[in-house]
Image 1 (spheres, rainbow, N blue to C red):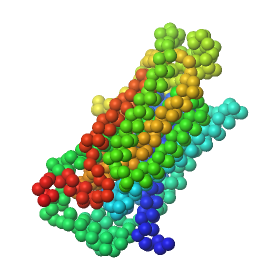
Image 2 (image 1 turned 30 degrees about the vertical axis):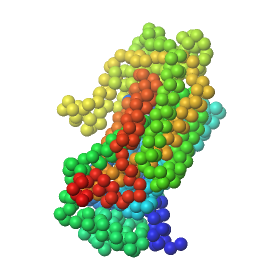
Image 3 (image 1 turned 180 degrees about the vertical axis):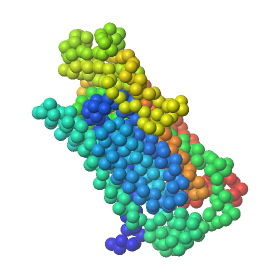
Image 4 (image 1 turned 135 degrees about the horizontal axis):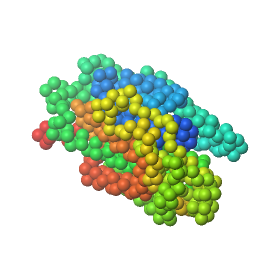
Length: 577
């Protein structure tokens, strides 16, 4: 096969862009397998609160928010190809920073840098695919980004499952070494995700630049050469003429502004679709899957196996979506997927509601046992409190701003003692606090605060049967997301934006997407610690109903149309005539 033939070039382009999706999936999914060991080892060693653990999870999303804000401008300034190279390099740098972290701030910074790379990839790769691929394969091509993203999630889950089984073996045969093994486990999970970053960076070096970016800078010869890499010569010349006509001085496209009336509607619609996409709770389900399944009744490595099953179904259903997206269209798949998501979320919420209704409030009983600002109960005392040896205690407590969420089962003791050392503000945080502009609590207040029992629920532990039902509900949720929103959101992001505002519009829309995701991830642990899991799932279901209505009544069908034809859909009637 001739490597320089258009078909071969398209395959290579999709391979490299798919590796970008792989990195994005690892960005989101790798924390799910590492989080239990962070909680068991590093969080206890470094005295991290539930809020700080939430920040570690959400840091990737916050990094995405920050980089998304600048990604459009960077893509215009540097070019699509150079920005992909930069994103790959940042991801590769973030892994050793995380895996070698010796405290909260280095860990947070490494995760933040990992998120910055993900945010850049989330903008520039779909943008590059939309601008480089022929219209006939653009849907399947952009869907490949999501397919490799889901494979990245599967890879992250497989790494977590592999390490979890090793840790379970140590727990059975050498329990005294368990803390050291748990600390090594989360570090190894991150080390194993380095190779895809290096491959993506190397592959991006051999891509052509976007023809639309080249033509906008007057590099006509380079633009036609880039088009001919993925199209026959005649098609390349026709498309170059269409792009040149749209970018010609004096046209509305050349004068395009994000605030022009005929650009506001597609921009706001893309922002709504992307915000609703995250409001389904997808990233929190992916990041906290092991924790959710453990609370639902699948303990230990069974929860990791369930996490792997979720991400495998995600990948398999994405393959189906890749085959359907250019046949059935984006609108149909979004309606189908969002409807299935509502069913899965409501069913999972009802399962948690049923389990929580069997629990008793023992907050007062635990408060009465606080002595010297500490609470210590051995396994026998907890059994006496539960009046049996078959129980689960869900506990949320705090020392001022230092909040913790714990789950205890038979054989485990409860040891809560005042913190003796906590991480305070960073240098920047301290400066903002002196200016009374730091919105976060000063964690040093925990050293002089009394112990507060925020929530204490005692009841039978979740049964494995209920855990398998919960997994089935989450599989429905994941399959529905994969077949609709998972693939179509990237198409909506790149296709709805008219050419003059595409890079900046995509940047802002993805910023909205990542902002919603960051907020949900940051409040997840504190919220479920205070109120349980059911309210969270019902909230996500309500947001997904809005998603279904938007897809049904607002979204136009874009299947089989060039980017210029899609832009005409939102143009004023006078300009179309």
